[in-house]
Length: 289
Ligand SMILES: C[S@@+](CC[C@H](N)C(=O)[O-])C[C@H]1O[C@@H](n2cnc3c(N)ncnc32)[C@H](O)[C@@H]1O
Image 1 (cartoon, rainbow, N blue to C red):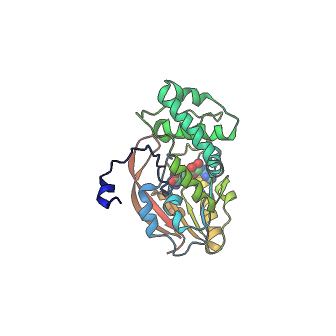
Image 2: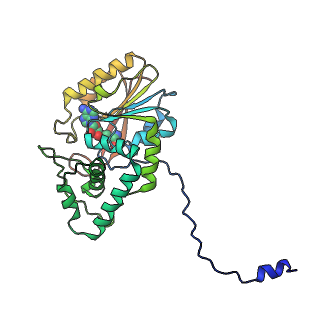
Image 3: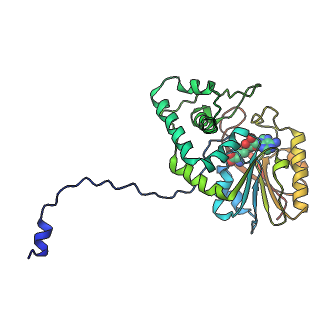
């Protein structure tokens, strides 16, 4: 009979065993770079969240930095934006995750080997849902500063960014995004046509800021829109909804929200109106204490 020592000293044959990479669930983070992203003021928002949130509403969701930061505290959400391509991306990632990953990986391979691939894709006008969204995500990851700008006829016209090796596809994040979006209803449209909260709900609004960048949509977001937002906030809070709004610290905004609680914060802006990064004074406006 072999002793334990004999067995340990035996030379074992080398077998090439393929150990699958472990699937480590990652917490979903924004899947697009988005102008005005709120990552830098998350802690300021966190300090002032209402104690209980029944349903979370975010009618200017953009890249969703706030939703993704607090996803674990939220059981049910409605996320909306006026940008149709962006909203389509949320919906398609939630439903056709694997197809989007494949299509984006194809863009990634082509981007690495072909000069001029960006411009070629920018000119394309795909019809298929997956191709439309994969193109949108590819351009977002490779264009200048993640800006989204279209010309008068609605064509995306941002130049290519100078990235050595942009991360175009992050499969595990896209899978986590799809998972967390299971608790969200996703809508496209004007903020007051997508958001119908009830008592006990929380609405967080991050509109284009007063007097700054208004180029998300051809129509922009002027003072009349700011006033319309205030009226919507009033009607939500009359129902017993907690409303929080980010905006720039201007006289106009202070005057408009003089019956709300207004807190100044200083934030690093991701992309300002001129495409640069700068620091700006902002306010967090709350309908509750
Ligand atoms: C400041 S960005 C939001 C950024 C977001 N908080 C983030 O973390 O990325 C403003 C968003 O409002 C959207 N928007 C502009 N006008 C709108 C309107 N009238 N109704 C709804 N959304 C609008 C834009 O498409 C843009 O995504």
